[in-house]
Structures are given as structure tokens and as C-alpha cells.
Amino acid sequence: MEAAKLIELGRTALGIEFGSTRIKAVLVDENNRPVASGSHEWENRHIGNIWSYSLDDIREGLQDCYADLAKNVKEKYGVTLTTIGAIGVSAMMHGYMVFDKDDNLLVPFRTWRNNTAAYAGDRLSELFGYHIPARWSVAHLYQAILDGEPHVKDIVFQTTLEGYVHWLLTGKKVVGIGEASGMFPVDPVTKQYNARMLEQFDALIAGKVPFKLEDILPGILLAGEDAGRLTPEGAKFLDPSGNLRYGIPLCPPEGDAETGMVATNAIKPRTGNVSAGTSIFAMIVLEKPLSKAYGEIDLVMTPVGDLVGMVHCNNCTSDINGWVNLFGEFASLLGVDIPKWKLYDTLYFEAEKGDKDCGGLLSYNYVSNEHVTNVDHGRPLFVRKADSSFTLANFMRTHLYSAFGALKVGCDIMLKEEGVKLDKITGHGGLFKTERVGQSFLAAAINAPVTVMTTAGEGGAWGMAILANYMIRRTANESLADYLEEKVFKGQEGVTIAPDPADVAGFEAFSDRYVEGLPIVREAIYSLK
Image (cartoon, rainbow, N blue to C red; front, side, top):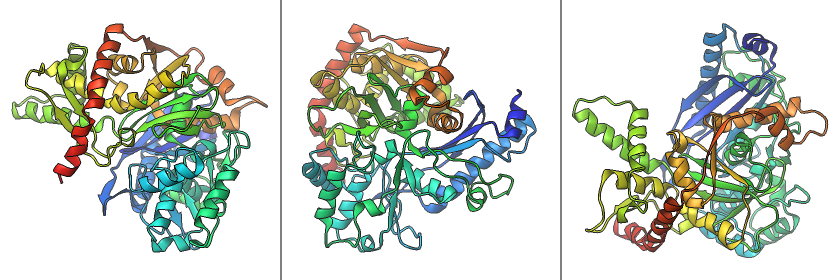
């Protein structure tokens, strides 16, 4: 059936994802093929030492993104978008959004990018014997309690960005299990918040707040479960034009880490994916728990509740983007107008000509803090010795290696120290848009083959649309893994690059230099105020 008719009949699914710099919507057909898309550019603000987006940013961004999608549908198919088979909402993971009894946001949204709850995270990690990163919701909550913030006494609900948007659209206070596992540890057996740790936390805060943690957290749902329907108010919020009908089912909202796993078919044990954009993270589905807790590794879950070892780094492409823009400015001064994609391709391909170890050059892409390497504040740095080989090829190779630098530190723990097995790992995100280069450098960093699918550019919004389709189109007892294998990725083409031994050796030499040089960037925090 032609796409226009499918859209009219609502035989579609919509995924919406709130990324760090862009909100994207992808509409897919019954076979998960994208038929239309929309987007909205946005940027977080650094106000009062907090990275945040306002509620107006969220509302206006969502509405503009949806309007752009509806416009795309109209222009491509001559159809007014009035109904959809199912909708799913995703967003950058974790963070802190708390509300009072009248549904008022008590303090500005604190995003994953903030490191202000590091002390609380460390205290909770010691208490639980389980790593609690600073960006996790419970760390933010406990830090606010420790700091005596006056708003905590009024909290009746705590959620994340996609949980908040889902609540606005459906009235349901729920999140998917993957996102829930980044709010508070989830028991892989019961698929609910860890009961022992809830008791420990409640004992810790007793007398300091008028609530128990389990009373303010959202409910947990697994992929495929019913997460409510679009209310009349929700339909009007999403589409102020009034064209969109209410009553559309929504699937459990999930974090961008989980939608990335879906979009790369990496939810089975011994599979994994690396998402490389503004931040970078590796997700490796574990066959068994790790032998102990590691500060560099977060334990989260797939959308169906399997345990995942996650290495999350706050910084990836932002510093590279800054340098590419600088080269673009230089070209403009010469009267040369170079398209942005060509700037990236030209500079990335030049990096392939560099020395395997980057010629002794070193860079740190820390626009913000980096917990994996214990760097508390952003200080992007480029460093070289007088006898280093300072060429354009080595310069760009250094910055691309640096994009994977902190990630490698965490992945080495799982792959080398814990002996975690990987059958396949898939790369997706902006760093892989230029053919081959980022993919081969990642293969060198982890010493494993890396696959990039032809669909990888669709990103997490597409993964969210797949989860929405899975909810309404799966057959009885069909697992998400089987659905992905048979209904989404069967016959999909991908390009796999095996690690080159010389590149692996070169990256190891760079990584040793990278770790040895970390005191430089830490000193810069104190010397560059």
C-alpha cells in the first residue's frame, strides 16, 4: 500500500527523541521504513552553574518538531497528518525533574551533563555497593537533600525528560525499564526498583524529607507493554493546530541509550553499540553481572530488562566541531565557501594519512566534565612537545582519537579485566557520517570489528518508532529480539571494518599518552579560571 494511504489510515508509528542539540521525529510504516521526518534545533543553557533547558524550550521544541513532521507529510504525500498507529517518546537519559502536588516544576531541569551530584553519587555507591553516577536521578535527589535545598520537602513526583513529556501526552507517570535503571538501580530478576537499595535509601533520608523514594518514582514498564493513550490535552499540546486526534496509544518512553540499542539491533547478550555524538557511550549486553562495581561502568538495562555494561562519556564531537568551524572560517576569509559536509569529509579523510600514534600529539575534548577520567570541569586542550610531528593529518587524527579516549578507558575494564565477550558491536551517530574513518578508529580503540548499518543515520528517533510499532504489531509471545531480527533488520546491509593491527598498536600508544597526560587537564581547571 502506498505511503499516503498508510498515513491516512494511521498504519504508522512515530518516534520522537529529544537529543542534546536536536529534537527529531521519524514516522515509519508498518515495516519500520521511515516515510517522513521533522526536527527542531535547540541548545542547552549554562545558568547558575547548571546545564538546563526550560519548560518553554521543551514545549516549543516539541511542537515545532511535530509541525515540521506534519509539513513534511503534507509536502511529500499531500496528506494532513491526523492519526498515527502508535507514538513513543525518547530523550537524553536521566537528569532531574521534580514536581509538587500542583504539578509545578520545583527547580529548573538538571540535565545529564551536570556533575553537581558527584559527592552524592559517591556516597550512594558506597552505601549500595553499586555504582551510582552523578547524572543519575537518585544522585541529584540525594545531593539536593544533602545541600538542604528547600524544594525537596515539596516533591511528590520525580521523572526524566521523556517521562515528563510522556506524562504531558498521556497523564501516565511511567518510564521504560532502561530509563528507570538510570534513575535508580533495577533488579534484573523482579524488573522493579531494587528493594534492598530502596530500603537503604529510605533509611538514609528518614526524617529529612516527608516521602519515601518509591512513592515519588515513576512506574516501570517493559517494551511492548501499554503505556497509555494520547489524551485530548496531550493531542493539543503536541499539535496546537488541532489536526491530530486523541486516543493514539503510546509505548513506554525510553532513554536515548536504549533507543540506540534498538536502532542498531544490539539487545542480545554479547552484542553492543557505540553512540557517538555530543556525548559518547558504549552499551555492551552482559551474559552475567560484573565481578565488582566499577566507577567507570554504569549498569543499566535493555528495554526488556537485560543487564548492560555502559561506559558513558560526556564529551565526543563538540571539540571536533569547534575545530572544523575554525577551518571553515579560515576558508571564508579566503573567499571559499565550503559546504559543512565537505569540510568534515576532507579533514576526516586527511586524518587517515596521519601517524598511527598521532605523531606524539595529544588532545582532550573536555568541553564539560568527564567522570570516567575524573576531570571535574571542562577544559578542552591541545598539547604537543617541540619534537612532535605537527601536521594537519596528525592534528585531525589526534582529535578523532581523543573522541574515543575516555570511552576506551572504560571499555578496557570490561573487555580486558572482566573478559566480557563481544560477538558484534555497531556504531551510530554523527561521528560515523563520514565513511570509514571514525569506524576504523573505533575498531582500533576497542580491538574489535565495528559495523555501521545503512540505517544508522536514522538514529534514536527511529529506534523509538520501532518500539512503538513493536507494541502494536508484535505477534503473541514475540520477543523484541526476534522482532528486530525478523521484522526490522532482516536483509539490512551493513559495513563491517575489522581492526588493523598497526592502528590498534598506534591507538594503544596514544591511549598510554592520553592517560599519562591527564594531570595536565586537571591542572588547567585550577590555572584557567
